Length: 186
Picture (cartoon, rainbow, N blue to C red):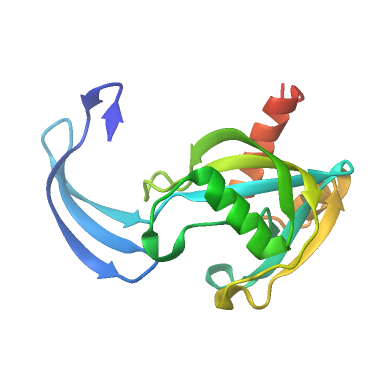
């Protein structure tokens, strides 16, 4: 952890406690600024791309069953390269949009980079606004076999938030970047 350029917490050693093809969990033995020891659990996951497919005053969202929370929720399309690979964020955004929705973006604009769960993970995500959309066939991964897609107006988006049907922090943070981009955030 850094405060400006000054290291605030020093890692003394680290060990991997779990690993699969999607993530690694490590436990670090640390020293705090006052010299006291501690441990820190860190989830390592690759950065992902999140796409806001916008047209006709609204957005295309995807819905799927989210095992960790035990229910279906709506979100903007998002994902990582397979098996932790790294690559061009714009290519990833175009790929995820097409795979999950079948849509192709004539224009893709980068709105920013954010971190999610920065208290437990260094994972971040690039947010893209996709416009000039062209419909096509989706090519969802096996894990996305229950995914649905639908267009929602902006009013319906906020109704989904109020009803607890959009609970994804990355989707809401991306919407905040969109509002800033449009000049509607105060």
